[in-house]
Image (cartoon, rainbow, N blue to C red):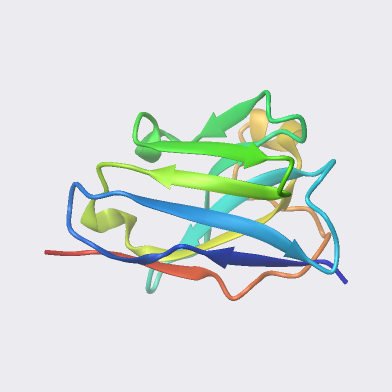
Length: 128
C-alpha cells in the first residue's frame, strides 16, 4: 500500500528557511495531485498547499502565500515544500498526501483522497 514519507523538518529561527520533501513508499507520486498539510499542537490538521499532477498548477492558503513554494521533481518522484520567512505560528508537524486539485480549487483545502496512508510527518519548529 502506498505510504507517504515526509522529511526535512527541523528547528529554525524566525525568518529562517526549510525545505520539506515528500516521497512515496510502496508506490509512486506520479499522476497524483499532492497536498501538504500541517497540524499544530492542540489544533486540527489543516491544508497548506497543493500541486497538480503535472506540476503546472499550485494552490496556497493565505497564511503561507508569498512565503512557501510547492514544487515537484518528476525525475526523482518527489514533491517539495520550500518554506521561507518562517514564523512561530508555522510550528507544526507537516504531512503530505494525495488530494484532489479540483476540490482544493473550490476551497476545500482540508480534504485528502482516501488513497495511501498518512506518514509520520516531519516536525517543523520555529523558535528563537
